[in-house]
Image (cartoon, rainbow, N blue to C red; front, side, top):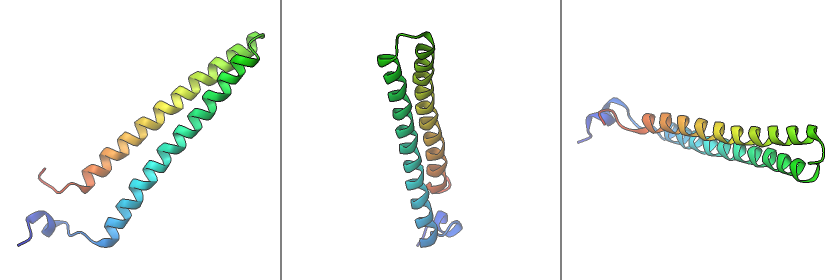
Length: 95
């Protein structure tokens, strides 16, 4: 006999596949944030390493490093928030 959670919220294959696609999209977005953060950090480190003679380059390089770290943190936060929401959707009621 099916429990009450499957009676209230029947699982339809279409819905399961949609959730799977959403999970994969969330992971893909997190990887895009990581890729962007690494590129910004690399640009900042390159400017700091090779153009460190001028103050403007030091400021720009430092800003890029801080921006890269910020983008990385934003990506982690957004990934975790959506992950929790999706986990809440997939858990049966009463847990």
